[in-house]
Picture (cartoon, rainbow, N blue to C red):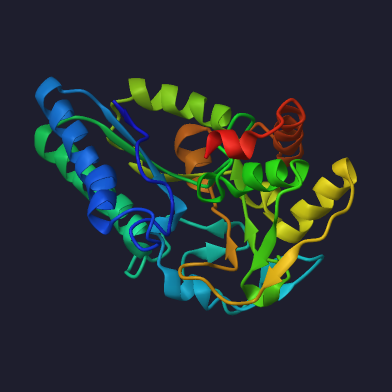
Length: 280
């Protein structure tokens, strides 16, 4: 059983678009229902979790400086669990992590307890930002696809927070690169493996919004981007996952480069006239 169902927005339950109770019903109680199924049928369970289970205060307080229009953490002041390769599984998950992050972290803990108590395998993948052609044009479901489609469709775009420069950085992962790992996990019963791993494109795929804008301008021409320096709840300057443990435990690494991902999204965007409006 693969649990990929959730309200994916870090602002879910607090942005007025969905209630906090609905968020818990979807993200946590939905997982409980699937775990009960696995308990009954002795089925293995794979949870697609998120980078947003990691503690917000130390990430928000990172000492970052801009380099080539992208924030970079400064060495010598990094919190435990964070290296030049990104955020590892040893990074703090102490609240606050947002209501969204809390539902996913709670799902992780319950999944592990169910698996140990009722003797079925549980694997948890903390994923970076998913990105690929055909992804819905919603910022909270994938900023890379949203930005490219919005640029191509001449929709309004704005850098929010962090001085309004667009220097905030995320990594990205193509969903197809996740599939080989899922196939291994669906047939694996070895309890000696670490049950929780980060799965991401890592530093090689990391880009800032400003850098993403340059990519779009090279393909479709320059355009003006708005700016609003007002910070938003839960926004972070630099979130890049270190997937070294997935490589060690499963021999997994991403196969699709960020340039390939962006080109795939752009080619799809060029075949659509109103993907943002259609997919909202």
